[in-house]
Image (cartoon, rainbow, N blue to C red):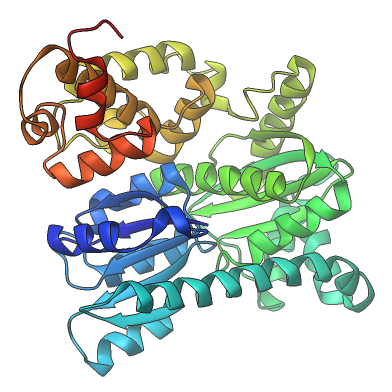
Length: 418
């Protein structure tokens, strides 16, 4: 299970990082951030199973972070930390679906028990989803079938403009309103089809009405709703990435996912579907294991957009020039190359073979190794020089990746070429 930590107090993050026996547990600490605003793109990038977050933080507090995770990444389980034993915080956390609420200070045993409870809950949910495949087939009634049929009608070539309006009205009377300022369609193919469709339906069910699934002959189609164009793009790429990860985790294969145009009216949903289907067919024909998710903008259809490979080269150059800045975040690089955070995260990991976080760590550690070999600077100074304000976190990351401490590396390699 992958765990991400969010707390503005460096001593708390250090305490959790150092006192908890990560190496002797089924949990891996994949990253940390000092506030919710910095955490969101890192969480998208590292895709943890569990987020541990403080309540009281500057810029974006834990409640707002939980709100965003609930809306955009509802599959992430949350453990909340608080130094304030107040009912109001606990009540809000319960409303947001938080799995555990722990009072500071916490010790390793308390955290282990909380992680174990959340982990057990995640495993039970996964077992339930597997069991639901056969159960739903027997128990599903007309409502779900009608809903999927109505949503599926929005993708039909034979549909007229008034058909889309009628379908939306029928869905509204069924208690499933899908009116939104913006729409975008995901068309995904996979094997085995039935099992993957259950996973897609479950993902949509956990989206709080922002994603709607309907089965297709080769996989599934997901209609994603957005409040703004930016919101639609963020949501569709995070949904497509989550679907890919859930399908792979379940052992599905042959996964190809196309993302259509973002459109502003129900009658244009068919247009979004057509582009998503076209891109998915291109992916199948290309049969490139590296690229599993592709959107219209990555196809270079827009004259204002750069090709993905050029964009990623620009991003890597920007990171090479700025990786020593401890405040460098995914959103900074995404902004520099003109992409939304989720889209950039997806495209970067596919084009580069590493996530943004992994690539940033590799840049910093390569520079750190050079400084350890060629200088007598203290490890804490080198940490600062390569972009880490927290020397202990630098040592943790170094040992995790190099299987030795900075001091051990220096002792072995100083004055030697790598």
